[in-house]
Image (cartoon, rainbow, N blue to C red; front, side, top):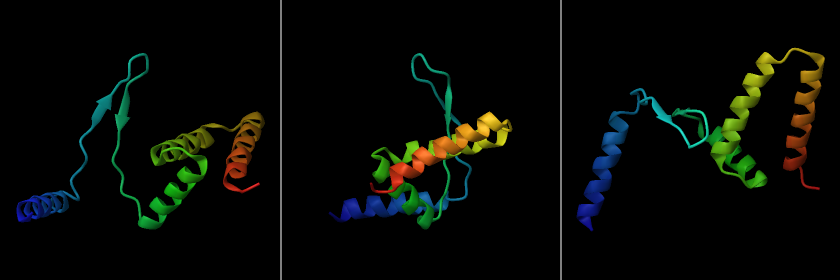
Length: 102
């Protein structure tokens, strides 16, 4: 058992030693889809808790919630027509309804 503890301690030390290193760029492509890039981000624990709570309520993985937030934020920056603003508000309303118990 002490060998396992030593291995875990070594992995923790190696992880902490590289905590400020940039994550490598990784490209991934599923068949029939465009290439995607994976990013690693650090989030404060309260943000992680909020993301995980939203994911549980929506019954989806936390990565889906994070991806949705990013895409929504980018879409909001690009959308300036009244129609796109109304679409965004409707989508936000649907999201809020999922979070509030009936």
